[in-house]
Amino acid sequence: MTTITNTVKDASGAPVSGVQVTAHLVAASGFLAGGGEIVKEVATASAADGTWSLTLTPTESLAYPDGAHYVVSEGERRHTITVPATGEHNVADVLISTPGVRADVGLTVTSGDARYERTSQRGQPNGYPSLGADGLVPTSQLPAGQGGDAVSSVNGRTGVVTLTAADVGAATAGHTHTGVYDPAGTASSLMTSHTGAADPHPQYVTASEGAASYAPTAHSHAGGDITSGILAVARLPVGTASETVAAGDDARIVGAVPKSTVTAKGDLLYGAGAATVGRLPVGTDGQLLSAASGQASGLQWVDPPSGGGGSGGGPVYPLSAYGLLAASGDPETFMLGSGASANTILGSRMEIPAGVTITRLWAAVRAGGTYAASAVPNRLGLYTDEGVLVDATADDSTLWTAAGWRGGALVGGPIAAQSTPRMAYVLLIFGGMTNVVMPYPASANDAQSSWFCRGPSASGPRRAFYTGAGGGDLPSSFNPASYGTETTYLSLVGVT
Image (cartoon, rainbow, N blue to C red; front, top):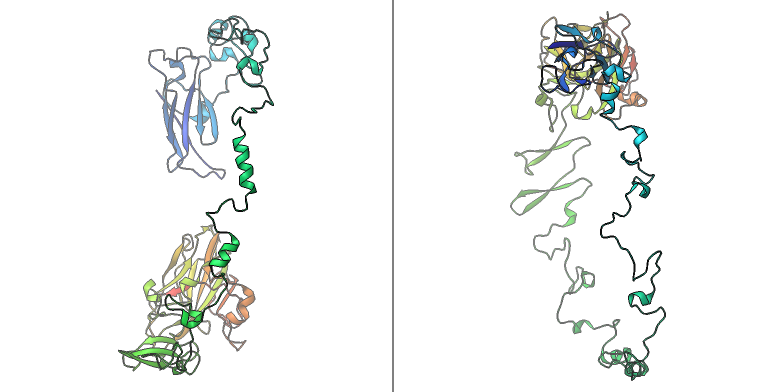
């Protein structure tokens, strides 16, 4: 047996794994010289490095080796090869041309013709039948007089026979049955009498009889006539006077809460205890309703958590549930993706709560990209709200190659906590990267940057910006009011 090998590669020359490889034997004989059936096809798949190997029967082992060859398929690629007697050989070293004539595959006129029918025998005696345009054998090629139980005559007649009604005992067309079924005309007489009668169906009530016996559908009754049944709600006399039905907050309904209890838009009714209802005035714009057992109502209006997150992070799903101490936004709102160009810098402003020690910087990645050699690094940097670099993570060429939270530890170690909240910037730089997709807030559009990035003071620091890596790395400092181009494509960044 002989081993044939090769390596599957793509158009760029990179190895490809998992490609189906088959070897199919094409030979003039169905048996090996030493006996035994030929393996018609063997298969394997390329390994992680693209390599594969198959052990095949040598071509010379065939009883009729002339023209015998293998067709090797690598996915969509085809190779025609011969297999030497022994050893290990690459496909490229055993390639041959596909046999094209009978002599190339070891067939003589005698041996070849014994296996096939000549085309000259189609439709001929002792040959084989042809097929007509309808896919059937023409009647001219069918044997005559071999019909078995075929019909030889119709009603005693031969040739082209046209049957008449008399041939099959049927009545002629347009015949009548006068006097056959009702010879006395009884049915006709009864039908005439029935249709001429003034009231042919006395068992049924006529319109005039119904009007005389029953009230019309549109009639009325006095209230005293209604002694049973249920009246429609629309017919009930609702009101606050006597002899009317009480409804709504009518004081006559025991336990009813008058609508006058609320005095302003947004007021709430609360339960102060068993069968006790009170009014909670509306809070100020933006406040949240919170449980408060110390209040008479058991409720109170409170201001929402401030800033960009922190360990509180909001009442629905706090940042602490992600393991983050602060972030540039709520991850639930970052459902839009956009590509990040190579050698660019993105900046996001966020609040660092009091008491938070910063050891690592993180950025969310929606889809990882591909890195090519570049002098521009890939890392994150922490800046003061005045734009001064505090520290950064180490350069990492794999930083943006996978989806998820990507980041690392600050090179200089942890940044000490402060007693009061502080604003800060986190900048990202992409060096030599392609196809990176970053998440951004839903419906982000730079036409909205005029109110998204700045407050009433147009000269203040901005929420987000982007710029080219002008110095080839993160800047040592920048002006938060003018650096780069302001944008609503806010990067989702956080700290731990």
